[in-house]
Image 1 (cartoon, rainbow, N blue to C red):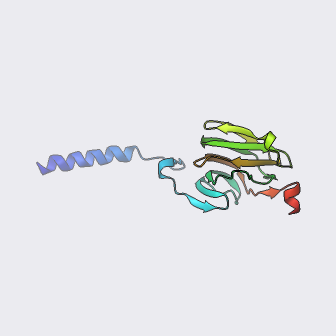
Image 2 (cartoon, rainbow, N blue to C red):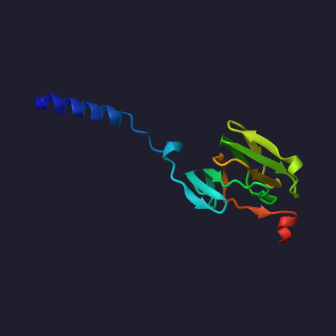
Image 3 (tube, rainbow, N blue to C red):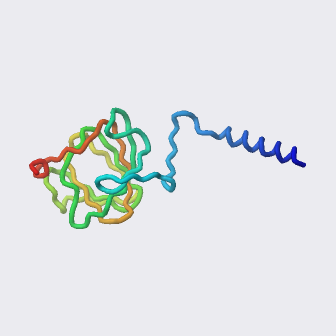
Length: 148
């Protein structure tokens, strides 16, 4: 009786190992994400590191900022944003102007070319956005924010 059970266990193990993920494939289950504190909330790195050369992808879960927004800034790389949950408000220009905010709900995607001045407002707790680009990247204040 034990031998058939052991054989069945080995067969199951062989089947499971046949479904191993190939080298280079990255799977990121958001329900198992490891979140780290950041200056604006939390981040979960998926691929690479935005401060180093090469492609990167990370999730950001920013703190709500009612009545306040990130100051206008740019990034040196082209970026792609995908709203996973909540609503992400983005506006473009060197001066914060609430009338320029565009509300992007979950499922929305936008691209941002390198050097485009923009600002972000987060109203909803639980907003999650995936950001990807090619590093090294950084945030460079522009307009009035650059003078502070």
